[in-house]
Image (cartoon, rainbow, N blue to C red; front, side, top):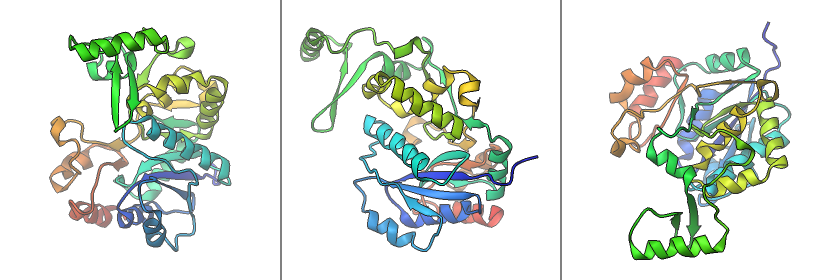
Length: 304
């Protein structure tokens, strides 16, 4: 029998479109849910406070950072948001990480029922990093991605005969601060996947205990591009289920990765409807109300 006192905390990382965020919250609203809003520090939080007023089970994360996609700062923002929810909520069984551009493909009760039925499990999309992985994935963790001023970075070591890059390689080698090959602490296998994770309380507790005991893990990911797509998978999948709870390889969210790369940033719309509905997922992303409100209207009419 599924316990009746189940609680889900939705942590929403947002930077724009307060009206669309309210629409999302209203679709996910239920007695088991609380909503925690983490607004990018570059955004005007007052716009969100004005749009979201009147929602009783809504809270703001006190820690704010620059959530630049793919940066270490985005990972710090994500971790601090999860920690804030864990420390300030009155109790939760899952923390579900969402952006403001996610949207449900079902009634909110179906999401809650699915989570309740797997109360001990985390839903995390993952793939092991192996030598035959996409070269771009391998470069994320085999090289140092060093942020420098003017929103630039150095990728060390450079594979280039360019004189400037050869000089950079030699200078960084002399510092002894960037040993090669890069080795993840603890002889762990590396994994990657979606950063939009759905974590059980047991997994959250283990994750933060690991970071406390091994702070060098964060130092490793400080120099890893898209580190938020690696750290949860790598820490949790190198542990035993008795420590983390079950890990189920899905985040039940549709994302149209079969598009041509130049189309990845284009929001979903009505032309994608058949693919979205046939996915069997409970959520999908990315949607943009200003790009195609018709698809959000359709999903509301069908599932709300």
